[in-house]
View 1 (cartoon, rainbow, N blue to C red):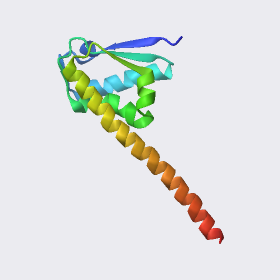
View 2 (cartoon, rainbow, N blue to C red; view 1 turned 180 degrees about the vertical axis):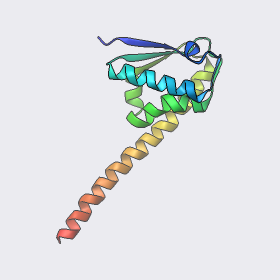
View 3 (cartoon, helix red, strand yellow; view 1 turned 90 degrees about the vertical axis):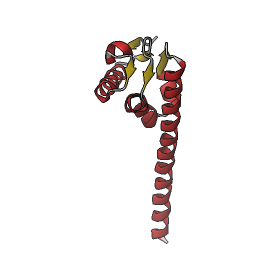
View 4 (cartoon, rainbow, N blue to C red; view 1 turned 120 degrees about the horizontal axis):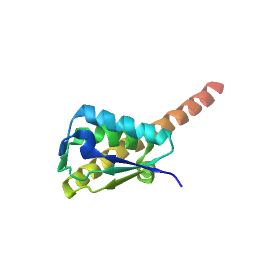
Length: 123
């Protein structure tokens, strides 16, 4: 069984509103290290009254955009988030999942175009 790394967002940010880019970067670093060590992550938003889109996008959005929503949901659990924060997290996940799918789709189309272009050159 994989260990869980619990990250206390209030402790990390030292503020009831999660907004600062430096804190978001620190969260991203902590998450990256935990993933490298094979941990799943619990993001504990207890005591956080609000979280800015930019803060969440810089950390959570990065992983969704890079690896997809399914991967993110398998690796990360959100706990103690109030409805306002949870809604913002859902928005960040949705927007970055769209970006992930577009990026993946683009890569596939580019590969197909290269293959087709190679075949056309052989004719």
